[in-house]
Image 1 (tube, rainbow, N blue to C red):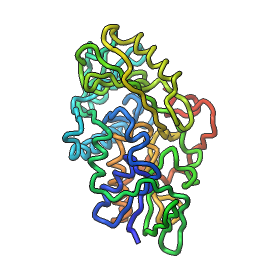
Image 2: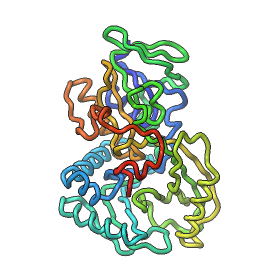
Image 3: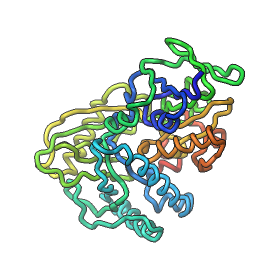
Image 4: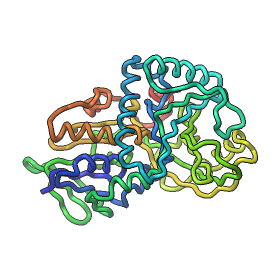
Amino acid sequence: MYDLIIIGGGMSGISVAHFFSNQNILILERGQLLSEASGKNAGFIISGFGEHFNRTAARWGVDRAAEIQEIHRSNHSRMRLFAFACDYYPMGSLAVAITEKEQHDLRESCEMMQKRGFRVRWLAKPETGLKETLGAVLNIDDACVDPMKFWERVASKLPAQPGCEVRSVENVGDHIVVHTNTVDYECANVVFCLNAFAEALVPELKGRYIPLRGQIVEMALQSKAPTKQAMYTEYGDIYWRYSHRKLMFGGLDEEIGIAKEVSAAVTQKQLEWIRDQFETSFVGEISGTRCSTMAFTVDGFPFVGKLPQPHRYVLSGLCGLGHGYAMECASWLYELIVHARNVIPSYICSDRLNSLPVYTGGDWRNLYEAWNH
């Protein structure tokens, strides 16, 4: 009888297991740990909701916008404990403007954040590798990390069963039975950390996610990298950084559905943007590509907390911002399950599941305010 079984071996599941490591726990993963988006991302540790501060403040109020920044800063401080020898670069992030509209939003965001005491600065001429920019906000508290090295280090002493596919989960009396392709497990509680793959096991999450392709192309550099900061533009839809004499570039891929293999069409689109926007003699040949599936929620916030059936919990839907949320969200679940103390913000709590619209297809950018930039 386990105290807790965690279904899903990505950063969410590993984060939950980390906080419950003093109990009898087990991570169940149908593939290998970190085999999906958690191990295939660019390693950005950035703060904020995924949109610029001024827009979050306009939609939810300045207090909530500031609270989201603090959640991500607290999450980052938890990650620092494991960041040594994980190609961790605590050099901040750059939100880069290449249009006048985004320049206006970024300058306004910078001023608002400075008034709330956040460590941000406006840079008129940031070093980005692009031919031309209209300035950028430097968020000093942000960073980059190698996601595989980092999460493998966090998981190194945690009990996990890879190659174990969960077929169903059953409430039996006052405990849970987890049926898998190998054996059945019994536990007092279960946490689902499945993101875009959750619907089969968690019917409550059906239609609550927009599954989106995340694809990255890596290219050799022909000259020294200007910086190792995380960089993004077009309201986060395009992002890149430099590491080990290479450019790591993602975005421009809003393809809906489970990404099973790299899309040549997306890669071509990314290469065209790089050739148009980057210094011509800066980038060389392709050295690799990779893809995964991200789970974007319809309102832009993760689901953390209880599910309707007893002893079932969820931590998922990190909207491509897992390094800003996962460990902090896991700490909230620990407080809820072990100490019966609910510190989960209402806009992140899973209690809101039934009040959200269901995504059944269509233009998600225009359907949901959270993603309509």
